[in-house]
Amino acid sequence: MDKETLVARARQWSKSQMETGAGHHWAHIERVVKNGAALARREGADELVVQLAALMHDVINLPKDHPERSMASTKSADAAGKWLQGKLDERRIELVEEAIRCHSFSAEITPESLEAKVVSDADNLDALGAIGIARVFEVGGALGTQLMNGDDPFCHGRDPDDSTYTLDHFYTKLLRLEGRFYTDSGLRAARTRLDFMREYLTRLKEEVNPALPSASST
Image 1 (cartoon, rainbow, N blue to C red):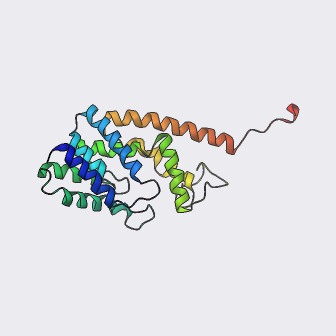
Image 2 (cartoon, one colour):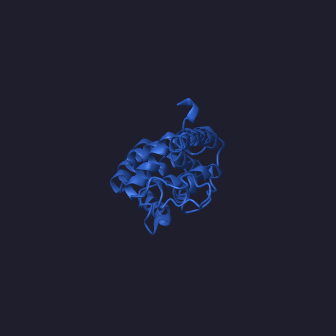
Image 3 (cartoon, rainbow, N blue to C red):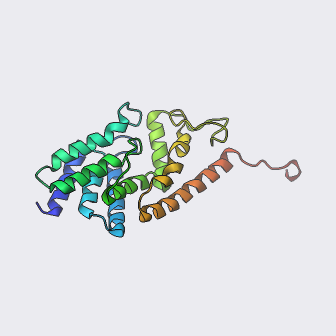
């Protein structure tokens, strides 16, 4: 089977299998595919492996509050590997499976191959920047969490709790993602997006705690 046909069939299969949810729908998949393609070219990774893994990385998509959430990437890897049997050589299938298994933050599996590192970085990039901010609040709304803690919204004196407060997800995960990038290209892109998120939080602090005019200026 030629590359173009395999990728087209993988896209069709993944789209038919994946259960969409807040923050994880087909637009997310396509962004990760694009991120992965750009990083693969810059880093010299196997572009076919990266593309296939990116297309199928969320084929088993469990909600963030599901008790087996940390197993979703392993379940997706197993499903993708079975579908690829007879369509791709075994070595590449193993690389696709590893890349899918290792992409998840909650799974806490460190990628070893370059392809797995690229897919992990491609997925994490979509959690950062302007699109990352949008996804945070989409997921928070779906889960019904409160927008922010009224007494300490920016976690200055308490441990963040994103199961209760949406804004806390910046502090439980997103601002810590810089340490989870494995390629130079991915890290550079991540730092740009993280700068934007920090600027957003600074502006949000100013709006949540506005400086009141002094009595002499009124």
